[in-house]
Image (tube, rainbow, N blue to C red; front, side):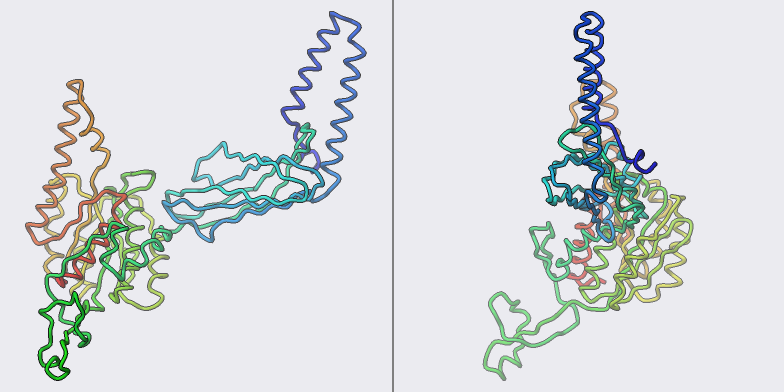
Length: 443
């Protein structure tokens, strides 16, 4: 039974069979061909038996393993490798059909390779998950054919392997060094001009070219008989909270990911930058209620705690309750903190409904509202119009784009900072805003 389940007839066998049927038809017209056709049938049967024998004489004709990352990075390309070792004494043709998780909805996965006798090969492919959670791989199926190509023998490996998909830790590694400099132009991080000094004094050091002349310490200069300057550093141990709106406004998809997942990926990277800057990072998410809370701290295990919490954020995309958000912040965050709110407003009416709560939060904390541009509107705006309907569509798209800028101006009017960004630029823009606030010492 196991033998029957693993044996498959190849297309080449059926092509030969169709040819034999054609020869039998010709033999009906030309009877002299009849015996020759049966000889061809005998030869095919012999080769078929030989093909079965050489493929099944070895119990373990090949060895194969699937190598996946310990966890997948959401929204990124994750490499998966398949290693195959050919134990046969002849070159085989291997067709790899990996049963990848159903979330990818890939129904035609197939890779064909030829592997020489007693040789090894490595096949790689990439997977890009677009949602967090558990991803189950099925069987790694490898169909092996000999040079005769009449049949295939199926080998099965690595059944039912689970790999969790976490927020984008690949993006986290990419921007890991941004915490130490505001001048990394190659990553698109803008240089922040310092407009003053924070109050945290670090040391007195000798003047070097490029130091701010306003920081010269004249008393130390007189004692040392050399120019000495005061060196300041950013204030440390300031509390920064990332508040993630997981309501229905964050359900909008962009390039396969929801705005919620973009916000989660950005939060992970920003939390790492905050901790590297010696500040305290915390997070919470809200819709109907506030949950998934991690209080702002800077202990060594904080990043792992934040990562696990972000992984476990689940939502039904209900309408977000900003009154609950305001009350929760009032109750649980007593120290003045930087609160970076990831949300989305499409219209001024939507903002005005929540403005009393945003102003209430901004009274005691430094509030930054991060919301998104609808980049799909750009295609409509930039498209050449040929019909009246296209003109209407373009005007409406321009109205929505203009309203986004009005929202940013309205927030600014009440002393609320804002970041209007495209989803793909969210992480960079959020880091920029945090570094700007630190550089200007306005927290």
